[in-house]
Image (cartoon, rainbow, N blue to C red; front, side):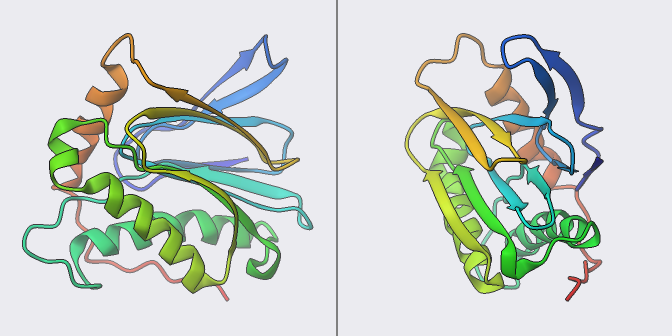
Length: 203
């Protein structure tokens, strides 16, 4: 398995889930996880989005969890926000390709982009995230096999890379604000990220 971040987000945590009877890797904002093992990848999304991508032929799959920074007066394709989204997706796809996956046989399932955080809702961040991830995969020629985007709720996602199965639980009511606080803090951190470098996509 291969883990990483697209910022100073630490490493995903792994624990044993007795209900699922398997190991689970918990993906936080700014992280990704790629594996060829029979393990579950889990995350909770508010305005953020996650791409669950697998290559059933190569037997490898992964998930990321990211948020587009708010663009201030710049909505061009070369904007800082678009660059960050491209970087977050290329990091995941590059790792999959390095482990034997091919874009021609990849399939993606995408989730998130909910309007759940007032500060981000006003800026249309959830909608921007949802639009970006679908457009990006289309331009890369990666099939979107399923999607659950937008709405006014958070989501808990369980992705089974070995089979492609995804379990989605919509969280209409959050009993605490941990998820929202984490995403809002992540959004603020993104304003300090230097994206002057470029990630080159393997062919």
